[in-house]
Image (cartoon, rainbow, N blue to C red; front, side, top):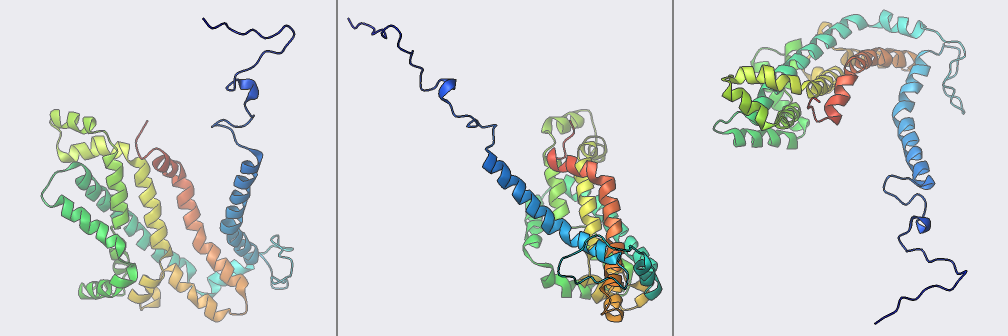
Amino acid sequence: MTQLSTPPAGAPAKTPASSPRRRRRGSGFGTMRRREKLLRYGLLLLALVVTIGPFVWQLSTSLKGAGENIYTTTPQFIPSNPTFDNYLRVADTIPVWSYAKNSLIVAAMAVVGNAVGATLAGFALAKLHFRGRTLFLALVLGTLVLPGEVTIVSQYVTVRSLGLADTLVGVALPTAVAMLNVLLMRAAFMAIPDEMDEAAVIDGATAWQRLIHVGLPNVRGMLSVITIFAFIGAWDDFLWPLIVLTDPKNYTLTVGLQYLSGAFTANPRVIAAGTMIAFIPIVIVFATLQRFFFRGVEEGAIKG
């Protein structure tokens, strides 16, 4: 029979290897070392400088007067004598408000088209069973592989054959239903539990009733996401409006701002002011829908 050895009197008791006393501080899964924390904050600061830096520089340039040097060795982000004269010169040089109205019309058509078309297509691909659904989904995925420059000629031929060349409708038509937004809405509808949809079917709900009463209340977050994407894409588009539009009265804001580069090549202050005018509506839309935007991204577009 083996005997248990007892430590001599006065000797310190041995602690197991897994004892909390011998564990290193900060080695748990929920802890973060100082180097890791500094690295993360350093990367966040770098990303902030890269993304926000150009915007701050453009805003500062647009507020600087003609007598203030913008090409100093040490960049000065705070103007010495802030002025709004550059914004007034933009309005005096080009019909900026008319161009902004055209851009708003195009963006509104793109937002409505994506909100309605992408929602209907996403719900059909996620919750309805019909012949050819897999093939249609494969075609949707196939369109995402091709870059936009490949199909831009065929798009122009189609728009011109429909008699929509040099019109705002022709500008908004190719982006009325983006395939990426269709996939996003399909993923949102797929995340809805099947039990909710089956219960509605048992109660005798039609496809439209299931969409309105079961689907839409649970995808409002993702709907805000595609609304922001559609607005920004239509507002910032430059190549397609430049190809379709020929009459200066129908120019969108991004196309009309090119006249500032031609008339004020030696004055980047006015160009910066025009850029800031084009940026303001994007800020307003995102600030209005940011709560729903982050809800759709974080929660997978499912309520509660």
